[in-house]
Length: 318
Image (tube, rainbow, N blue to C red; front, side, top):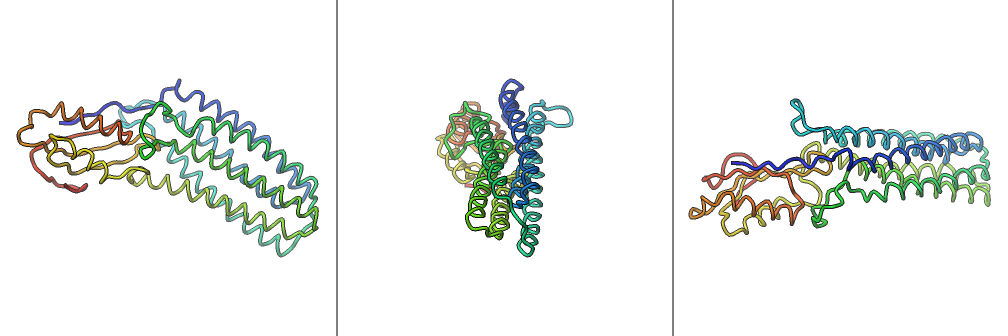
């Protein structure tokens, strides 16, 4: 016997504000990309061009996230029974890989620039960097206003909090670019004061490090979901203890918890009731669902009641 409440698939109405935020963010970020490329070429600043590379990765990330967000709203069909939730994870994986390549490219160019310094026009560099900082702040506010959550009505505690990997990764991109803009501004001021050309490749190396950290975070989250790891903030042992604490539950085994996408958490388990309560399956199922929803924010469950205390498979027994 099992229970399958419907997937909490986002509707077009739910995601429309998020899509508008992404489109507006892409437009603003595209404008600053053009400005930084032109400014970097005119000023000769590698730090500014490195930041432009980061901005390009932001546009790439925002575009992928926007596409995945639209695709994830498609309902399940005959060939995709769970729907299209994992498209956002695949988009994040591609995004993280591109960040890794960009970071390595910046470091290679920075080393070459360190060995062969070029003249830097610090004033042009400074003006473009300030404009970039302002735009990045605006975009960060736009994406931050989305709260990183597509289910803001959820009352689950923080350990069961559902985060949209697309929005979160896009926000991290923009936040990292904001920090990069600050780095370019600092470099421009120091070059203007000291005329030390080595500051430019040094800041570029630091920007590459920031991009690498963002890549690591996105790749780690995406890969964890794709290998069906336990969602961040949740513990299989904690869930087992909470269910086992119910009066009519004898044991629980073959307990599995995983992500369909970055937000949609699923759970399956085999439940054995006390001998005197085998006819209370419907009541106990409702109690388990309430515990899972209230304490862990898990809505999509598959529960199987049986007589054997510990069946085959993984997930452990009490």
